Amino acid sequence: MPEVFTIHELEQGSERLFEVKNEEESRLFASNFILLLKAGDAVAFYGELGAGKTAMVRAMAEGLGYKGFVNSPTFTLLNIYEATTFELYHFDFYRIDYEEEAVDIGFEEYIQNEGICFIEWPERVHNLLPVNRYEIHLEVPDYINQPTARLIRLRRY
Ligand SMILES: Nc1ncnc2c1ncn2[C@@H]1O[C@H](COP(=O)(O)OP(=O)(O)OP(=O)(O)O)[C@@H](O)[C@H]1O
Ligand SMILES: [Mg+2]
Image (cartoon, rainbow, N blue to C red; front, top):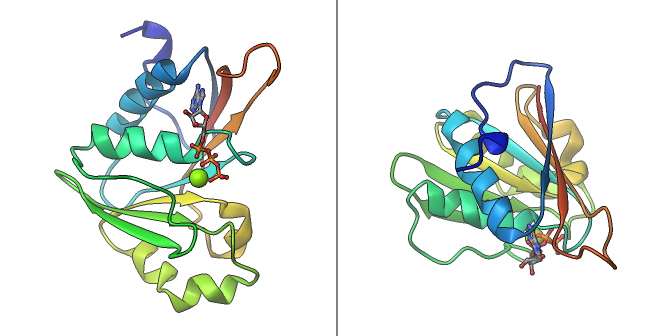
């Protein structure tokens, strides 16, 4: 595993930047990142359409021992995966217009409990996000010349 993706610890309030060349390296990042996760954590994934938010959640769920299918819950807003140690809550709020729609499906309760929340389009529920959370910002620096390269900005709040 390239040392460059190793994340020994991430202090609250700090940020780290990773450059990956392809999806395989994104998965390597994911398998390192999940080592930081503890019961009740939340991870918010920012990035435009196709940036790789779902791909990253899939890699993390697999890394946490979930053997099933991981796809964006664009219409259902929430998928639940039984992983080895944690229950995983995969949210996608792309389609919501009001934060109340997230409240209605129990978002605040899921945030409070012991499972791990993965949130796509967290900007749609900004006021409901837990104060303590990880943020993963995915950017595609050059769609034309390096379509599989991603800039990963990891923050801990
Ligand atoms: N380095 C990379 N990391 C992640 N995904 C990559 C990478 N390179 C190419 N891809 C591809 O980019 C696409 C990302 O799609 P994905 O559905 O994960 O995006 P998304 O950010 O969840 O979009 P949406 O906002 O529509 O939910 C996938 O087809 C994936 O195979
Ligand atoms: Mg997605």
